[in-house]
Image 1: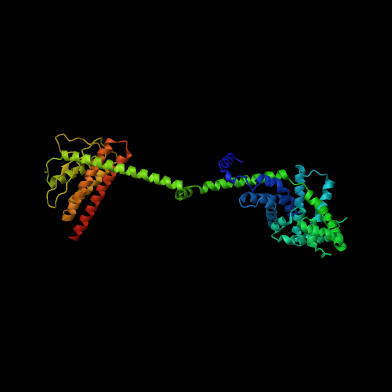
Image 2: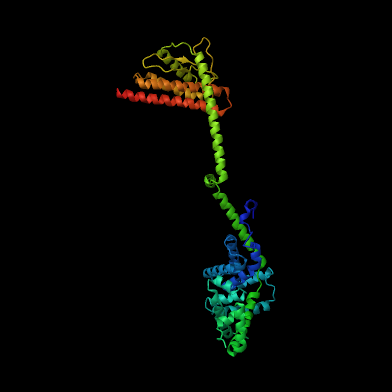
Length: 191
Length: 297
């Protein structure tokens, strides 16, 4: 960044800074929720590089809507709702490519993000792929309910994220779980 | 025995999403209902399977540092774009909209400014009147007895024109400026030419102020045009013309002396030029009226 841009930023008022998200600051929001956002994005787009793009876009939207985002208790639900929307939109414009994901893993391994041994990495990637294939077979909104439930979201947060009734979440999770177990067993994941 | 649990309620029970009283009732039912207990065991197994299946997905490392770096850069870019757009939109439009945006403090500020301007205006008017009266007094004291005939007046004006035309290039330091101040008189009555710098044995050389020459040239030409037109002016117009001319000439004299005594005051020069302009306008009006009247004859 050049000096002019820095001077511009320094001369800017503080009210557009990364101050408050209800009781959380922007930095705190990132620290607490970026994993959930990235993992949800990656589970949907199946591509780590695209998941990074999605995560960046989600937090940029958070930054731009600091005054209208919910407080701490529902911030994760808001972030994952945005994540699912952005990820699905990204998916529409992108073709899923394992090649690209492989290249991403290769590049990130070189920079130290993936430090596992190659064979361990292969096994884990196989496991991930089996789970993703099973998840693909489950219809919406059960699939998203499962995904968010596995990330530790409460029924209320899931309901907000997916615009569903909170009282229906238990049934949707149960049906999704049964369907996943059935499909995952057929695929061979159930060992 | 209570009713058997549906899958949603059982799932909510395992996920800890039920109210405490409902949780207790479900616990007691599971203790007494074999079918529901079997369903609960199945649920536990499938949940464990789900956790295992997603473990690899969710345990895969998250590039925290890379994400932080990217987001910081994106936010920074957003802020730069915001600052630049603010700068662009903060030009004249923002300035004027800011002026029109009246808050309490701003309204008070405008009111104070208006009061200050009003006081300054009153002060300027009073000062101008005082100066004008002084000039009149001076003129009256130097006015010689009414005498020169209209022909003499014409001659005088022509002299002005000639003098100014002659001195147009190069600009001399001083020229003679016979300025006439005419009191009002009736039609047909010989005009009373009052010379501001009368034809004394030793006429006082008058130094022209910068920019004054062009006005004098214009006035001289207009005056000669009016005089050269033989059509007589209507009596009412003549009276009005003479009266207005006298007022304008007095104003010119007063403002000129003020401008001369305050050469560094741009306002004084402006007042003088405004007076000259008034005279030009008056002469133009009269010349037009006479031309129009002449056509009528």
